[in-house]
Length: 287
Image 1 (spheres, rainbow, N blue to C red):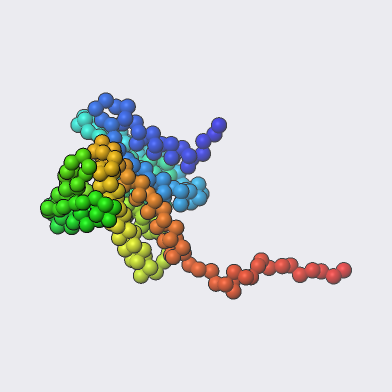
Image 2 (image 1 turned 60 degrees about the vertical axis):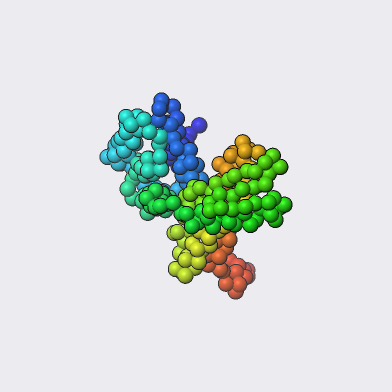
């Protein structure tokens, strides 16, 4: 069975991302892997026709350069015994794009590459930012006010919420990570990434970007409420698993809903008059 270049490119990305799992004391950062996988899968789904139509190919020097970049990343991970992270995945993706399609393909692959760069910058900014104490306290207050709506008594003190659980008081800490800033950055950018290269008015793009990030923020509040319910009704162990995976599920659902609305809003509407005009009909000849 012959594998075409686009399919080989996808297989190369998957293999290059997953190879570190087989390297002792290396592995991958699954959070970053999930985010990059989701972002690339969404982009390739939307742009698959354009990828298949690419006629450029990487030259000998471009193949050598791309292979060398990947080898350097692997060597560094092995030497430092660290997991494959977001920056490493971005370098690997860019190196594979250059090796398969050459530098001229940047006009197509700049959107997913930009997504990775902006996401990386956002995470670095968060790493040097003090804890979002006011946001933590505000979200803790929101949870304490919402729990009585489902019949659960709650009290709040700063970032700590005490639930009156049947098995005894349950103290939950709305930590800095619970504010969902990383998720808002990641999935807010993922929401807007797919519309970056659509030819639309700046005013429309700004409105869509705002909806993407605000929606991700509101979805995070829903996620936190679901986590509180899981801890209350299903126990600490199950609540911990919900805390890890429930947010991903909600964010994915939000992204899909957002895309369907964004494309409907941004794509130019066809004039009804033009839409009613069919293809030209050749006049009939009389014999």
